[in-house]
Image 1: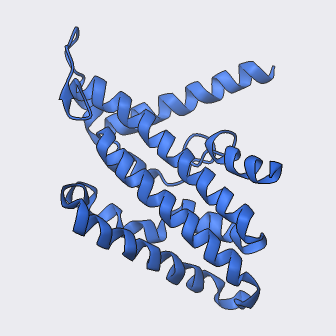
Image 2 (image 1 turned 30 degrees about the vertical axis):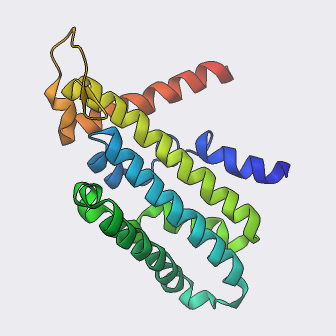
Image 3 (image 1 turned 45 degrees about the vertical axis):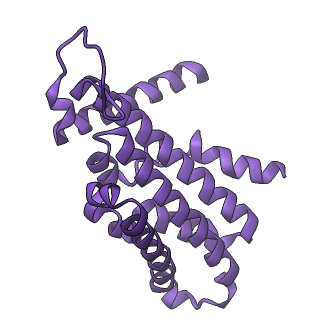
Length: 198
């Protein structure tokens, strides 16, 4: 049980895919304009991570080395298709907001990286814990970045207008603002981590 907890918690903390490993930046930059999009993308990626990690760990001994990456992509694409159909059926507005970035989960380097680095070498339960931890870490990072961008960039939170003691910095709602916010957060987190370790 302790091993499962450690596999889970590393994705949120020391191996967070956005803040420490710096993977999956395309969807992070694109969908972090507001918290609703961040929640949708984070949950979609977490579902795909957990399910694909579980299946890959289950069949890892039967997949020949030469074709393992195409096999992983087929498994991941299956779960991405499920997510796409569910979003189209039950959350069409969110589906339109996330756009092309839902199908692109198939080639998201976080998901493919965890399949190759972890699920292909470990049993099912640790792989599920790893997928859940990495997915939650991705979701937390998206929420933090989108919180900063939405509140400071548009003066809103989850679509609700905040009372504004300041004029919104509109650049934070644009692509350069996403890079700025993410860079400052990554730098700040690493600086705090270096202070704690010294």
